[in-house]
Image 1 (cartoon, rainbow, N blue to C red):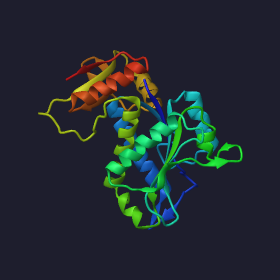
Image 2 (image 1 turned 180 degrees about the vertical axis):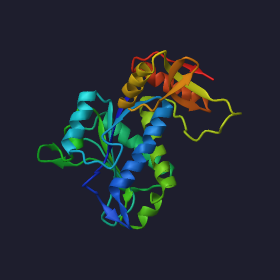
Image 3 (image 1 turned 90 degrees about the vertical axis):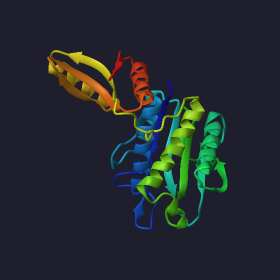
Length: 262
């Protein structure tokens, strides 16, 4: 099962680029959180350097991704400098990072963003790749700069809906790269049927609570529901069966037994 590490640029004491009353760190976070939702719906395992406004050391992000054994590293950023258009950086040594960078560029074009210059590029430093997160990671890695926060370009990502659309493009690119079917989190609701993914049922609540904590530590939202004398651990309630299937596949890839109920 594909494993994607999401590096949500900056955070905490590091605001990143600023312009038009916005801070890059907050946009990166919101886009990243939406990417996680799309990946979860599509059954792709992910890990993020942060899920809140936290300060995370740049090198630590690389170490975490390497130790976790990620198959792809994506650093989400937004630019400054008065320009317009996207830039996607890959390694100077090319490889699969370049393949993904080109796919991501295509998805950005599909939602109306133009390339800044070549759009897909690399940058050489004195000791190999210039950028730390590309140089120090052991898997294909890219840096995405979707647009410029300090120019009119910001109008392409200055609302929650636009940031969600950007995230959707990123998730679509990831799915294309791994050959996985993209699942939209906004698929039309059905006739009221909900599909629940159950991963455990216990007569002792503390056992259910323990499993819930274990799953949450792995980035999986779940809850404990008492039904009769049993405490059941459920991971989501979906109106679209495909989304429930995606969650079940993700759980199985992590070694958990589960099944879908209605």
